[in-house]
Image (cartoon, rainbow, N blue to C red; front, side):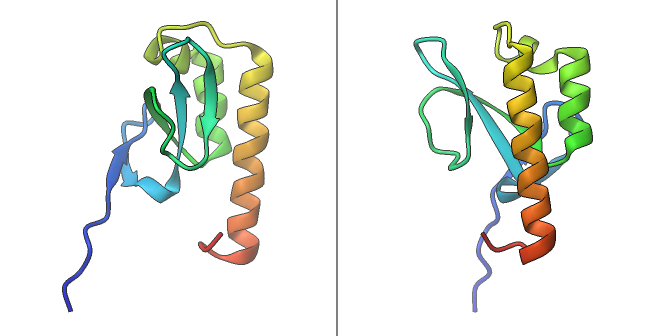
Length: 99
C-alpha cells in the first residue's frame, strides 16, 4: 500500500520542521484580526508554533509572533494561547494522539 505524504510545517520560534498536526496555527485575517486556528483552515496569513508551552512562552518573551504577523499582540492573547497549548498537550498525553 502506498504511504500518504505527511504535510510538514516550520515552527517560527524553534525553526523545527514537524508534522502539521503537531503544530498550532496563529492566523491574521485581512481585517487584521489575530486568532488561534485549531483547524488550520482559516483564511489569512498563518504562523505555526510547536504544541509546547515552553515554545509559546519563548514567543511571548521575545515577541516573535508580533514580528512574524506584523502586529502587536496583547498579553491576554499570549495567555490564551499558552492556556490552549497547555490544555491540548495534556489531552494528548491522556488520550494519545487522536483527538
